Length: 339
Image 1 (cartoon, one colour):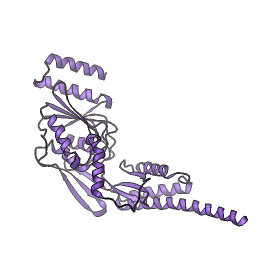
Image 2: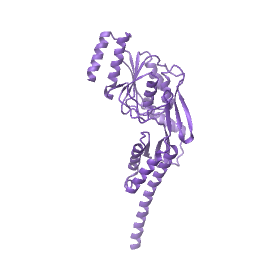
Image 3: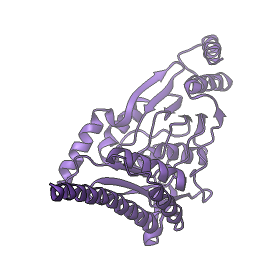
Image 4: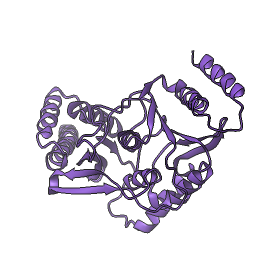
């Protein structure tokens, strides 16, 4: 009986050690990826110091894999101060499973199609104002036709509002395609530098697009504290090129593009591997965010933009379906709702 009890105790001790050791390996691999790929070559030192301190305190000992991943994601973002870091547990991941990339892309596109590739609604507001509520950048290949339809719908409007208040970003190629609708010719917008292979990529708009371009008209972009990544980029570059005014709240400030890594066949790690630089001022919005031209609460941004456009319509004597008296009445109503 004593031998059995000793054996059980030893087994549990070894199991406990293995679990701790697994987490140690995960932490080591994360640190290595940050060291090799993150745009700041010194940032891994903060990560390693933080992880070692927590290991000594036993912070991770009783955490399940989901909670362990959630805590590490939070720590990476706070330690390095980069919101693009992400880390999560892959519950059903199987490295042995053969992945057909075409099937994977097809399935991904199908799920995006269920949300209309991010295009929540497209409308014509009173005063002949176009409105696009856009919630996410799906791949440009799958989204191109929907974007074209949205831009064709607003083509005859006098001004355009693009609502990014709930947009969390996404595909870089879709960002460039969307921007292409507001430039009359191919334009180099920004470069992306990758430290790990010392390479720089120039990112440009397209000269030709599927739908109608929206040129030489007023454009207003709505932002909130939730507007993130590629959504911030759309606001930033159109604002920089003086093609749009931003109305709403200051954004979080996430500019660095990411790469994906699977850790120990159990976790997905997103590491920001590139640094974006605008070709206008050689800067970006990382840690800074997009500063609105008109700062208002996110809930009031649409009314504020609508009111501003209507006032400009009166000032420029632009013809719409509304009379000057009707426009003034609508402006008064919108401003009362804001106040």
